[in-house]
Figure 1 (cartoon, rainbow, N blue to C red):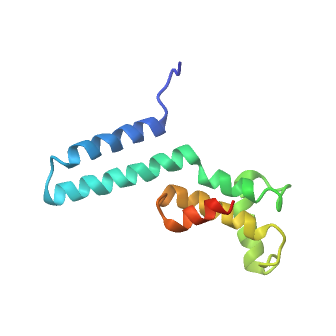
Figure 2 (figure 1 turned 30 degrees about the vertical axis):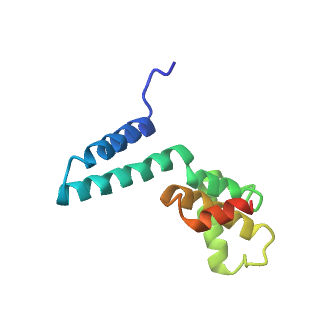
Length: 120
């Protein structure tokens, strides 16, 4: 039994409430309820799936000595400087994993995400 309610649970409950009352609203209020519910759904997936951590972990083989919370910035710096190029072994796989994780949060029904998941 949990002693605290997690933030993701609160966000999910608020999104569910907005979806429920959306049909009882009209016009501008219905639109804003839909936008708010969608924003909360994204926040819920972000809290649950932690795409930033997935992205950083995917870079682990390329940056094993860099702390997890610094890997994305370090990878970006190496790409910008030209130290890493498309030919860098493991780079495209790591970037693809990061993109797939973020896409799963931002737009899980995006067709390219399904394509990426089939090839993983």
